[in-house]
Length: 285
Image 1: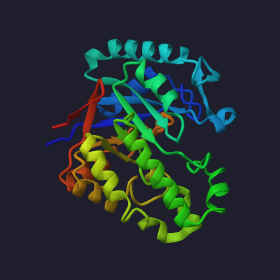
Image 2: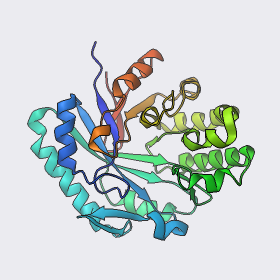
Image 3: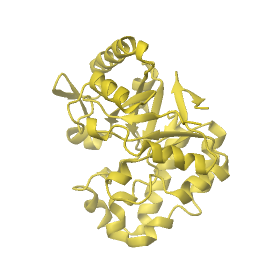
């Protein structure tokens, strides 16, 4: 039986760290790749300490503050037009967002999520102590000055807060710290989740939250997806039943990257890929 090919993590030209590729161009490429459903997840960072660094989105080629919600009106209008344009092509197009979580930004998240009809709200931890651990350039500023134990406490405390905040449908690239942290901490970083992630997964299961299988790690030279196999197994054991797959595409060439492998990976665990509509998870059976 052929698995439904979906990509639920795509950054169009609204994300300031993405290529200037329009939503409709991603849709044309999705058809070429045989994807049946895609979700756009514009990247939003709202940490006030980083206001002048990355609290922006792009609108018509110009950077604007992320809390100037005019961009969201434009974003939803563009997605609605794409849904209409591609409805006869059997391509489902969903409106999502990826929000970088840190403590103290709850009111701003509420403003964004509470006022727009998102299908899918993806939560992510890109920064620790206001430093982007997702960045090749910035991450050494964090890793070189913190012990592995400190990083572990920082990351999983923030993750727990993100989960219990109630804002997110799904958690993105859960062990993102592997991307650049391995260089600084070595193989010990691969097991820091043990003993701390299990209760977090139990809470995610209780809330009916999803866990993303993010394939971007593969194009960065890592052997496993985010999160790694052991972490996915722990999620399943804790009762997490909702999973999504996403390429984390920031360019047209990255759309659909390793999606077939990610779907096969879920199948290996007897887990089910999901899509979302109006914040509700729907299994791809």
